[in-house]
Image (cartoon, rainbow, N blue to C red; front, side, top):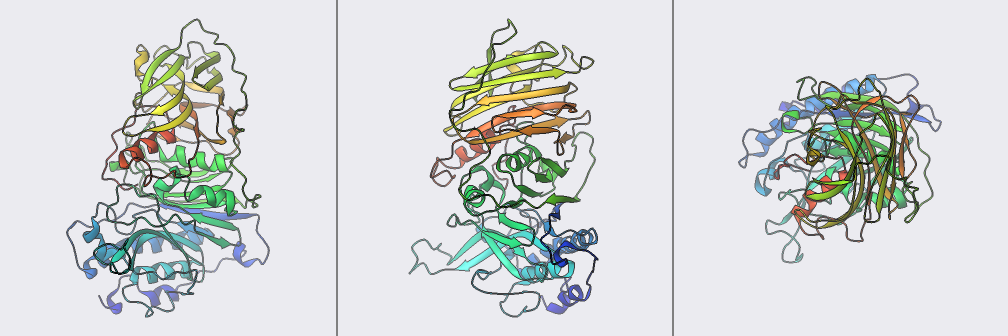
Length: 540
């Protein structure tokens, strides 16, 4: 394809500049706030999954890039400082090694080579996507993060790890500055059934802005120690840019619940851009701060409403913490004063994704309920609006402490509040359900764990099947407890504290393989219920 025929014309992009008065990047002073944006993109994907020409691949990618350009212009009109696009947003998913190749581009190492692709388009061949992204960032005068594919040549005769086709292929996040400069690239380390890509070394990658340091990770990376824990604990990263293709599995594993829990646990801003294909359960984007969601987007598959959406929200600039500081969770072994159950009903067991949880039912509109298993004890102090307390809905507090064995082996601890599917059948506690009409006015969920890594989630529901997470101030996380505010009122679908003890080699490449990776992903996310069937062909 000739440069003259490109639908993303670099010269045209350069020619259109938008200027806003008082933009934080131009004030000359260190800002205390910045505006972040993510776009929930309904990717235009190729119909032909057989090997195609580079020209055919470019046509698909240019359609998606045209959407990116439009959204970047809108983000700039609203004074956004940074914009994140989803994983697989430029060419889709479901490729093998050969069919994805025409969509890949060679990328130099931005840490050793300065390059503005928009201004220097002839430096490398077949870099049309990089040129377009650079020009979009430059036109909109913002930081831009996107996900594309990187190809790096290698020689099998000299490199024993080099694939037989003589190239490494990587799932890659790229970052560009407001001047179009190529700032950073990150190769996804924790692949999720992505045979088309190679596994790189676990290298943490970040870039600096006037409003903070941003680390880049991709989708499945969030589950494991590498590379995200070193980013937040050792490299002073206070913001995470997170392109993802995240398959929602309600109620156990909604994107908005788990992604917001990471921001809470680690005290960072978390910019999650999910690909928007709700018909396949890829849903849920958001801008999350340490004290709650600033903006999120979830499409109800019951109501059938909601499409792709640009989210923009003002975020606080977070000052770097001392290095080697861990998440704000309680110290291992901290005692929690678990009260005695105030109900004569005994504890019972029910299956949650193949594991036997110990549950205690909530049989009154208010009170204190406790459940214990092994070294894990969980206490719920709650109050329900009496007008919504009904025998038609049953909630239970559950505890799990043990080795998960379904599709792999992994030790975890979990405190959870779950809505049971059938109020008359306690064995349904742990099965999948979508909505709740029970309104909680107070909730304190406390746990006793043996690890400092605890991830809190509180997911709400409405009558249309829309999931929601609370904004700032609705509840707090103290390291071992979720505490709602005095004004809290919501139809709770689930609440939990999931405790993780990261191992030195905690990643799917060194564990028991992809089956373990699937179960680990679902269980560590922690939202209570039986997981919906996870498509093994889906990108993570």
